[in-house]
Length: 381
Image 1 (cartoon, rainbow, N blue to C red):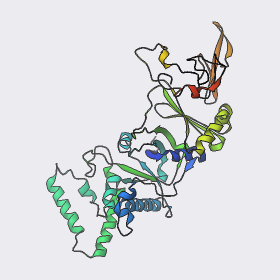
Image 2 (image 1 turned 90 degrees about the vertical axis):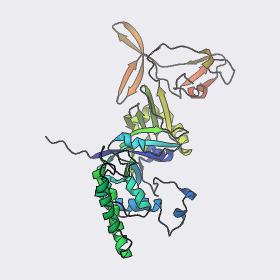
Image 3 (image 1 turned 135 degrees about the horizontal axis):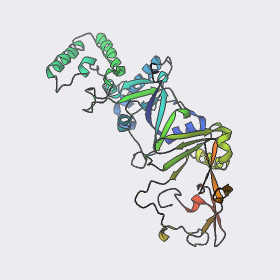
Image 4 (image 1 turned 30 degrees about the vertical axis):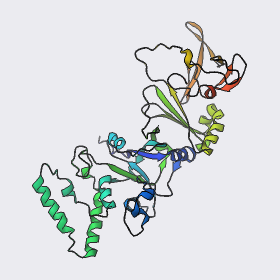
């Protein structure tokens, strides 16, 4: 039986955290303005001059062309994605910025228009784009053929021709942006800087919460903080009452929403509302990186926290609800952990940031994350 053609393309986008917040609260992000790749600001003099063509003009042209191809000619803004079939290439060419997030999504192919980034750069220079036969030639391997095709290109776009004819031919050449024949791995692409792999852009009118495959926050240097085996990330939002996304080191593992998500995590709603008002996503990192050489836990007295009320070091207690279970080995106490629709009894309780703890010395009561600054990091604080 012939395999059904893939209907989704896995893509990557770098966005402000506010975009992730909108996904977690509304379930959809549809840009009102064209948040494209460039952020020239006042550095690009051409952008400030309406009479001059610049990269932002080329990006706007790409969006308009994508709107026509999607049957949405009124589209003036889109979500910009890196959309090569090889995910490593998408991660390689991401322009990462501190304070942003890297979101991986599965985008329906019917809602996606693809284009070659290096061709877009030529369009941004308001130049005629080299035709396919010229772009496909390896200059080092076939210099004579390359020279011949270059001569053909120059003659076709000769300055001796009528200006209207030149503009028409230049506009036609810009359709090379959508020519996918040179996008495969290992195919020579003269714009790709010797990487033998094009950088493929994707435009889609909007993205949704259900399309998310992975989320990685960026550090102060703009590098994605990837999770290692054993590390997990949980995101909380207010969509449909409440929605929770669970990730391991590979990506999304579970998505719960509505009343089911609300019931065991209702105490998180005040924090979610507070974080949302401040423009941030409620998130929690948990788990430990795998320890292969010395799995035994050790207690370092230098790491124990101090009670902010009485100053006594490391004297906190917490009360957990355990469940008595009759087993073949006798009565045991188990702690319930929820996963999906099921509850699983485990030997150790699940420690959350909002756990109530009490100082044994003065009786002061606190939330766990008020004392242990980074509850789930290596070392415990």
